Image 1 (cartoon, helix red, strand yellow):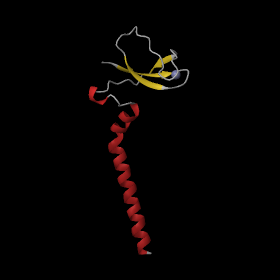
Image 2 (cartoon, helix red, strand yellow):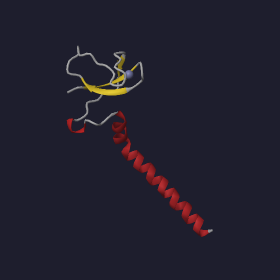
Image 3 (spheres, protein in one colour):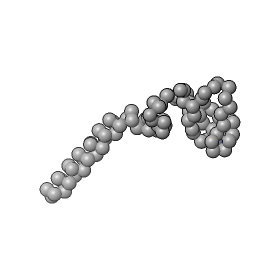
Image 4 (cartoon, protein in one colour):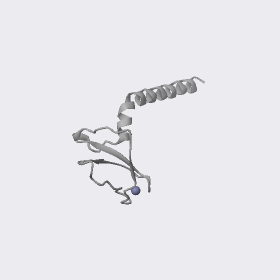
Length: 87
Ligand SMILES: [Zn+2]
């Protein structure tokens, strides 16, 4: 099923919804406004992961990078401690 991401023009709320029909009237779950914009960064979340939004998707894509950054930061902390102990 296609899941589309929308952005409300009235309250700027971002949400995702499953669109069953192109004629279906979509409204903002926050303010009920129909002044909404379909986002271009659309992806279909797997059925088993309905909670996935664009930010968790981004995190998943960048998890390896983030882990590497953390390792570098931890390594830096170790080096700092070794230097502090040797003084
Ligand atoms: Zn809204």
